[in-house]
Length: 296
Image 1 (cartoon, rainbow, N blue to C red):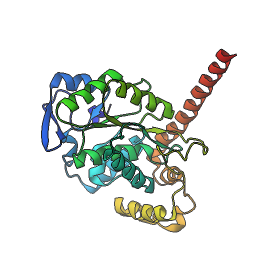
Image 2: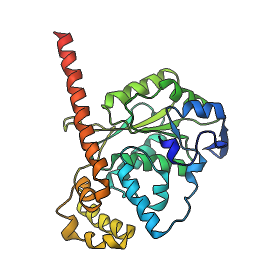
Image 3: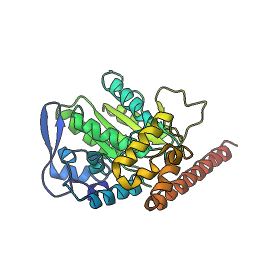
């Protein structure tokens, strides 16, 4: 899981989070309990990774791309591996707006879009940057078949409030229907917890996409993103420079297709993402069918 791949391992020492101007230690037993559900971004996440050779850095880059849809690798943000899409700017603006509002926990924020559009990376970066800003405690939930424990989330939020935090941010890369995030938020609100929930979902139909709590991750790269993507590839490794030209990137305006073609080692994970999207759609269709049968 997340905690086995990054700093802040269970049982390796004290874990501290920033709450306002304070550095507050989380008791070991509570950390271990909450870590079953949450990746709590503690101060260890902010420690830069050790320097490695150019070859080692490129190997880490390829690993980051292959794993980015299933787990967050905080070191990748230190190394500049994550390509920033334009919708991420709007996402951070909306989160910042909510954090300065008294109604920050009234609605979730849901990033939606097709597989391969960068939603998982965007959510992980959001959690990382909020942690770096040290404004609020941040917790991240990776994509898993099992639903997270509401009790663990509520307990951590309550601890954070008791430690002096006004509220916390929960980033859940669940790739679920937006109703799931409303239900979690409703549960936390009913317990008096003040939490901003940010989630992910497959693409939501256009008749719903104008809702204020939704941020779309477009499948196609814009002209500005294509230019930035060329610079991004060139900065990662000089051997990718031949691919970082308009004649190579422009035909593949899909973010997914561009990575699939340029970096063969990412293909199996990206293929799994597409299969996962189909599986999720089948489950939702089955749920709708069952509701119709019950209604009749």
